[in-house]
Length: 147
Length: 397
Image 1 (cartoon, chains in turn brown, yellow):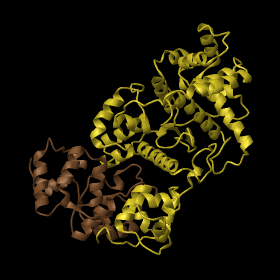
Image 2 (tube, helix red, strand yellow):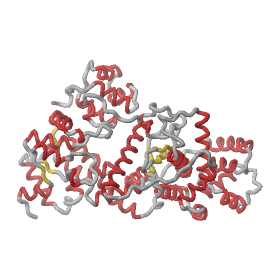
Image 3 (tube, chains in turn yellow, orange):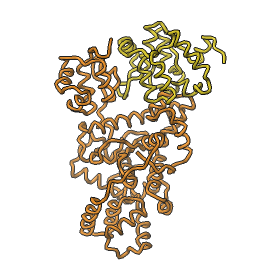
Image 4 (cartoon, chains in turn green, purple):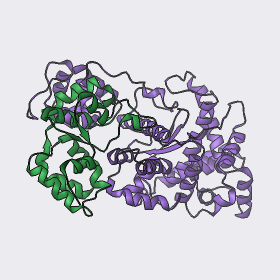
């Protein structure tokens, strides 16, 4: 959602959408179903529509639940018992781990925060688990995209 | 695993999540469209719910899905350790709606503190204090002075919405977060205070009329001042008898009514409106109440306080008023956009803080939207709304 909402909105960067669509067609772009839930709750109408059109990218929660719970047990900061909803972080990492993928996230590591509310954010967990993680710009570079 | 297959959850966590949310078995069963006995069997570990049912349960109880798979219930402080004693509310037996509102407001306060520190902003200090051995009228005067709003300004406000916005903004400047909560019955509570320092919270029931909110906000401010001076503690720790507690409530009431209606201004208005010899019927009290943008009931109480009404006259007036109110149709709220509702709920300072953190890349879009309970597509409208300054909106939840 981050890329669509702020730095690279779909109406300004239509080619980016095309490139992402190519990744989807190649079966190289997936996300846990919890991300779809997040999009439905806080996303823009355009993103919600896009997510519905690309529903096949979302992997059902039961498929990643076990791995996500295991990651949460190891990195307890990823789980907030006071929270009102499940954060997708552990599920994103779990999916990458299960599929041997790369996590694409705009989240920054704890070391870059003045007062981190937890010790481990997505890039921190990925680093410790040996899972590659990159930002969207990193993805563009890795894929050799030019705009 | 298909979503209709059962899933091994921890039964003790099912019990914990339901009880911690304040729901009886039957409401959970009704929501999940199963028999009560089925939920009971899940909680005893005799049967297991399906994945879809666990998902539904998490949504209904506003809990993370993974909480049902923990080995033991989380150790969380009781909610009653956070809020002031509320008349008629038994600590630990709050309604599910109030319990959810308390959780949401506590999380919002924590998020505000985190964002302030993340942005390197100083945390505002709440420095007002009140002691029960002080005259409450004097505490009211101090509260009013702290707002920086003089009587002329108050009398010039065009309506009660403008008044409520201005009082709220003034009190937010004192190092207090002012939130509004939805869905809680007014009979349970009109307002409350979260006695956390720094950055204490005053919470107002969103169902309240704006002129009543103005009174409630000062009432809660008086409680915060007492708590800051160690004169009162949380509902869980408060041990005074009902009679003794009534005195504390009375102190806060008098302080609030004098903050809203200073004595000099009251006497001037009564003289200017030719009401010095009034017998104080419903119409006369309404007229003065409208001038100060408070409820007629609060005005009558205030008039009694200053000796314009005897207790006997007040009781008669109260009976006339109750009879008059029973003839009125329920007031309907105006339309508010999602962005306006977000500001109304969380307050302008919190909304500004979230936007600032978002601009500084200290917060993700998803978190910003979650913090404000607002879809990202409304953020531009939110920015425009905030540029309008306090009091521009005549809307509320």
